[in-house]
Amino acid sequence: MKENYFIAFIVNEFYFLQIYEYLAKLLAKENQRVLFLLEKEHPRRSESRNKKTLKIEEDFFRRNNFDYDYLNADLSHLSTTYIVCATHHYHHYKNINFKYSVLMTHGIGTKKGYFNEDNTNYDIQFCEGSYRKEKLEELFPQAKTQFINVGFAKLDAAVNISTQEKNELIEKYKLDSNKKTILYSPTFYPSSIEKIKRRFPDDFKDYNIIIKPHFFSYELKRYARQRLILKHWNQYHNVYLAKADEFNLVPFMAVADVMITDESSAMFEFTALDKPVICYRNVKLRLSYLLNKNKLKRRMDPFIAQFNSYFRNVYTYSELRPFIDECIANPDADKEKRKEITDKLVGKTDGNVCQRIVKTLLDFSSQA
Picture 1: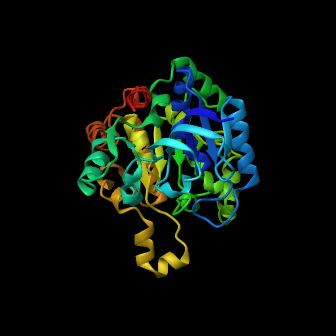
Picture 2 (picture 1 turned 45 degrees about the vertical axis):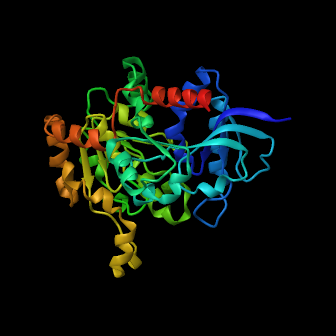
């Protein structure tokens, strides 16, 4: 017997869920059946998924009453109207019985991989700003894909958060309501974690500090050193260290006053909430990257680099404190810059992005 789902979300990596969760709940309210499909094998690495990670994923789906299955299983029983994925590896999904395909990437569209011709195999690609849409149309004028600028779906939950919900999060994270809150959101590589002093929480003891590492910092063996540093910081009373299953950055962004990040595209997300971002450019590189500058150049995102001037860039630990204090004292100092980059890269931040996506999907299905 065939099972019919309106939409199937492909979860190549667990942290991609933060782009889908709010949208999936809206679709469920429209009485549309939603399915999540997990990968037991890493799509870009020759290793099996961490069993602990899979359990976290499965617990999340059960807790939210979402149906799920595995991408590498026999899926011939499915009759799926749409498939939405967060990667350009289109050919990975050929074992699914679907009618139409939709691409919604998990990050802001600056990375080179987001402008891959493989992405034009989809029927629809939702874009989160004029930059991505115009660039795609310029690069692929003959593409069959409909490029639709709707905004960045992930931010809806932060924009729409109520005062009560925000206060509940402050209580949950054990934050001092009399202090301003720093959100430190480093990526996994190249990361600033090893370049931040061990006394970091003590140096900022008059602030709340939320530390939200990239999921790979928890999952991959090579980042064991990062986990030791995180464990040390977690001993301080003014620190809330996000757990591995707290994959969604949105609640932390909603309660924070300023963000410190490094090479993460989260800088654009926090900026879109009209809050100040400090980019800590002091990152730890592996020896092979230090010896081979071309390898480093390929690793770093040149598209992000062109927007460096929009942020407060810090290169030494000693600079962090004065920059943080300045951002807190004058939060509107870079307001015009934030608006400019948000309009270009993120698009509308009215809290209705997912509503526009739902309407587009429903309209498309009714016409097809």
